[in-house]
Image (cartoon, rainbow, N blue to C red; front, side, top):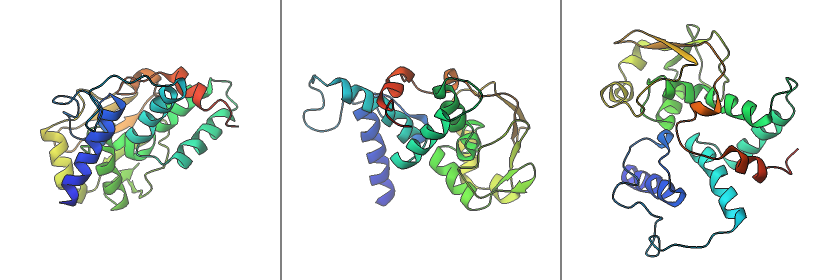
Length: 210
């Protein structure tokens, strides 16, 4: 029952935002009901500029499985970067290289939540060493693989049988078939984010954050 309720809530989130967020797992949130949840969900509503920006921010938050406080912390860190890059580029690169997301994007887990479970259970290896922190930011040349228990995990098998995304981003190099592993070879770009969103609206939403 709890599992069903969780799945329903994920569908409601995606319907409310009007976009499928691959990190939440199963597809089909918008197929039968391509409108917001509730009895009035299929009626057009006039929404404020603030609400539009809020939705774009929520796409990032829900897809990557973050709390608002976590996302704000990443925004602050990104704005303080010393490389001179636009902070949104830094933010996206950071979110895309979080360990749980990297496990998901490599096709080792069917969702970011499932990837987090595998990480916390010690089934994910970085450069051959167990790492149980989902927030670890994968560095260039880091290689991600699974333990034997991880490769035998039903979540890994599910990800192989029904991949959630059609391809792995070009920033990763993937090796193996039965026991896949991947190495980060480049910095992820905004174009690598696997759903539609407007970066400028997120920038405007967080313009006061320092």
